[in-house]
Image 1 (spheres, rainbow, N blue to C red):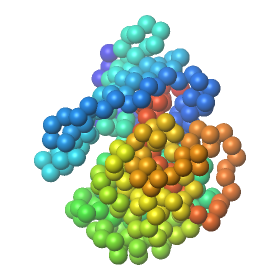
Image 2 (tube, rainbow, N blue to C red):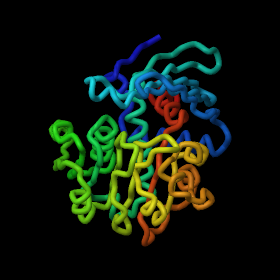
Image 3 (tube, rainbow, N blue to C red):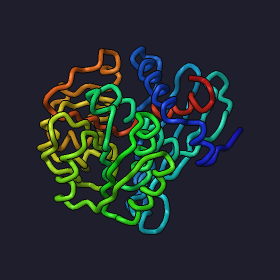
Image 4 (cartoon, rainbow, N blue to C red):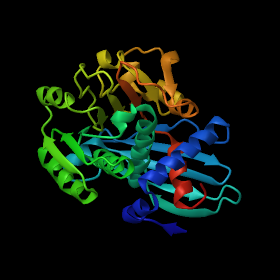
Length: 309
């Protein structure tokens, strides 16, 4: 069985190809050809969480084991750790072990890339600047995905940690992206939102990180919060938006951004349904794409990594 470290896993999962692999797995899910039970959570010490995520389709089976420890950043350790075990579903033979945090970061960013390509207004998806709130692993992955997948060359990163944001900006130069960095008090975000039309929130904050007044026509991807009691997006803004989610079943359990806003999930469209239709006409309201994660997206990454997609 091959074991792939973070660098090797990343090479197997280029963002444009991974976005197409995610679209393919969503099409299989529409046909009922993907098995993916609900994600299991187990509380650990130090506010940590163990996540267990199995999934399978005709040509691949996986189980992802991930730990999330928000306090690790203060210890100089990764917040997310773990692995994805990939199996041949016909024989049960292990095919390989992918680096879990790398799979998580890249498939999440590829999913956002896919959603923005289909749901954002064409003139919005075609140009920057991009606003990313946060400066961690997901922020980095989204900057790289939008640079390589949609050709963005300019971004603004707002973070409570200015040094981390500055480090991220230097890394982004390698992708041909110019990144301005700022600490993220409310007044800075108010000013930034006047100039951007695509926003990604990628933080571990349990409370909203965006102001309620976001310009009409913005595309917002909220990818940080994944429990029913946490929200990066304020309820007043959620209620203004046209709402999409990565999966309806996951959002109804875990999307605190939507649950705390008391939304009617009958008005929420899962991405797999949106992709089956023509690109929606731009409306006056902001578009919010909420992602909480799902094992089938890790399955999409595994199918791409082992040439089974």
